[in-house]
Amino acid sequence: MPTTLPTSTHAAATPQAVPERDCLLEFRNIRILYDNAIEAIRDVSIAVPDGGIVALLGSNGAGKSTLLKAMSGILYTEEGVIENGSIRFRGEDVHHLGPDELVRRGIVQVPEGRRVFAALTIDENLQMGGYTRTNAEARERRDRVFALFPRLHERRDQIAGYMSGGEQQMLAIGRALMTDPALLALDEPSLGLAPLIIDRIYEVIVRLRDELKMTVLLVEQNAQRALDIADYGYILETGRVVLDGPSKKLVANEDVQEFYLGISASGRKSLRDVKHYKRRKRWLS
Image (cartoon, helix red, strand yellow):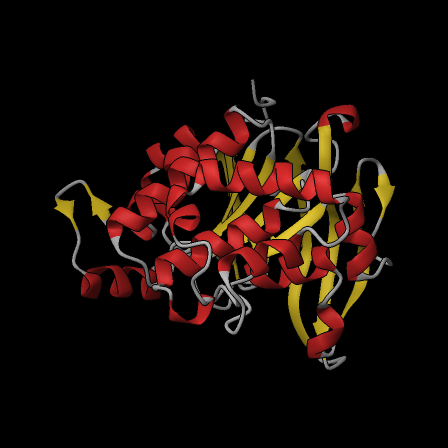
């Protein structure tokens, strides 16, 4: 069973929110700057328990992807730096490590936009994902990916660049799974996909937790879909955590319903109403 997290929905989780022995990943009072001037993340603390799904929610520019880049060691590609705080994985500070070492330790990210190797086949993409493994390990992991995504097996010899967006997302996740990660971070996995494909991908995410005991950090703008499967959620706005709690409690929160789910006491709100509500809402300040 996933670790039970704290029930407060009034402030960001403190580093002590999850016992360290149960916590796989922690952001501790992280502050991130771009170009030594632009503050993207301000004093954020997030705890990700071993074997659970944690959702990071928020609008565009809230800082969700920045946290994933910091966790994956690729902030430097955009002139970003961790100005303060730390990132701990399995009880050790890892924010100073390079991307290759973080992958070896079990932290793997599927970035937004899929980014498969377009000129390679599905099979060759998966081979690239498992290049650090022995041939036997790579075959075993490839078979596991094909079991999760039968469509990839059916089209294993197809050039990835000619696949649909949904198939490319499946391949991007499958390639990440070839490393056998302890923690899989997914950045906007439903972006631009048809509802039936989103259903399939979310089914796989649940199976990763329930059957493979994998920890998943899920970044999404689609709050409803993410909270449907997550154990715990954090809501970010303007670079800081404004609300957190178990998913069921967040879904029942009136502010979350109106601000992120577009639902009010009078029924579902239009996009125009939601935008107006966001402009006038003051609980984020």
